[in-house]
Length: 179
Ligand SMILES: CC(C)(COP(=O)(O)OP(=O)(O)OC[C@H]1O[C@@H](n2cnc3c(N)ncnc32)[C@H](O)[C@@H]1OP(=O)(O)O)[C@@H](O)C(=O)NCCC(=O)NCCS
Image (cartoon, protein in one colour):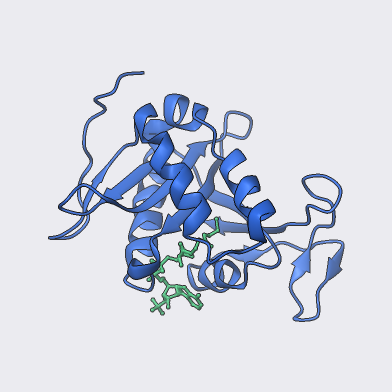
């Protein structure tokens, strides 16, 4: 792992794209606290921060992306990887777009980059999960062509939920998309 992975190019005239490095960890932690609109309160922010430890920037950098503005501030990020266990599968672990940048096409641009990368690596499907209370994420992933996998129950809106997926009280919604 080096601090100078090759830049994958611009995402627009204003926004540049590169792979993350370990020293990006602190500002990613800030984004994980601030960009989710207070979802889950302080406990939710802590959970998100703990879900993106430094190891992703050290060992999964080549399949992850950061988007920066011309002044170098963080605009968006995607943390993803190629499954080591299932050679058909790529996995998007976390994605975030800054509050001012939402609905501007950056989330979908990052996903398309990741889909291309995954296809080039011979992967035929992408998986990810989200929390049942993250309605924006469920709407976004549905719009991006993901299918919601059947769970053990459906919530009041008909969303399939996997109860205790990541431990007691940590329910999740599971998505899959063919490439
Ligand atoms: C979810 C998120 C990544 C989407 O990124 P984005 O840049 O705002 O999304 P885009 O502008 O690329 O939108 C892509 C499509 O999804 C739709 N979409 C995006 N957010 C949506 C929402 N909240 N509700 C309904 N549709 C939505 C867009 O309308 C667009 O569809 P279109 O092509 O028909 O216009 C971003 O809103 C975000 O960072 N949210 C907070 C963090 C989060 O919840 N992350 C996901 C879970 S880890």
